[in-house]
Image (cartoon, rainbow, N blue to C red; front, side, top):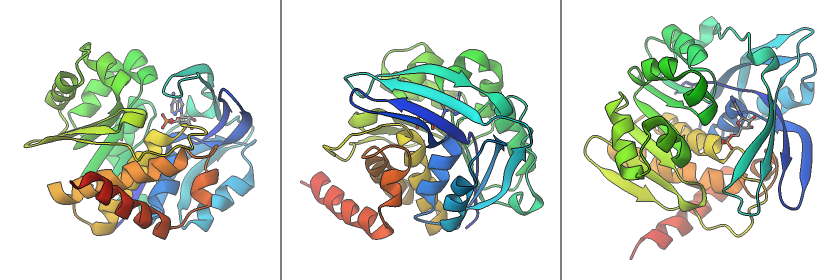
Length: 300
Ligand code: AMP
């Protein structure tokens, strides 16, 4: 079933306590679409500049990702993000953020994108997220992500967006920032009160909490010892989750829980190397194998 993602397409520079990478493939829509491509066909919308290496688009296309909606601005520079992880890899600092072509992005979707059933509004400006949503009136499941940058800079637009989405995924510090409440259970419920039918709070290596109409539950992260670079974990989580929902073409509570588990496992692979390197080295059967281990781990 058709799944669309709109979000950032980036060149990331990442420092971990032991290694560094410059200008590697990244961005919320990129991690999302690659993760979702293990499950379904994805159509990606975003913007890049003239400096965008063609091989990155080729990589996405090799996964069956439709890049018709990826605008290339001639003379423009691609969005760049530079981040640094502390000794505790849950702790990250943004060292530099250059919006470049993302600042003037007009998310005008190709006609072929507008009849999608599943829509993910990945990290990006709420103004862009709302504009995208306006073009996909028939979408049956709309889920959004947000982050500290937009909670601070575009709070009103974000509150407007929350009234119109079915689900929101955000991380623990962002939930606290949005609600001004340090208790995550209360924060999740407060965010749900802002509009979405369900809210997923991601807690890095501590898993995720789901807040729905009739249930609240916690899923642990898959315990991987090889955390190399956590960048994109949140977007891969969302990609695995939405990809699975689109594949099953169902989003009842049981399927949603399975989808959260697949999201968790997809993210557990992403963090095992820089950029999309680990995801490029695995296949769907590796996700399924990890799912078997995860199920065993959770049954007692
Ligand atoms: P995550 O680690 O899942 O939170 O996502 C990391 C990705 O988000 C990186 O690849 C960045 O390029 C992207 N990113 C960082 N800041 C922003 C921003 N302000 N807007 C959109 N995407 C961003």
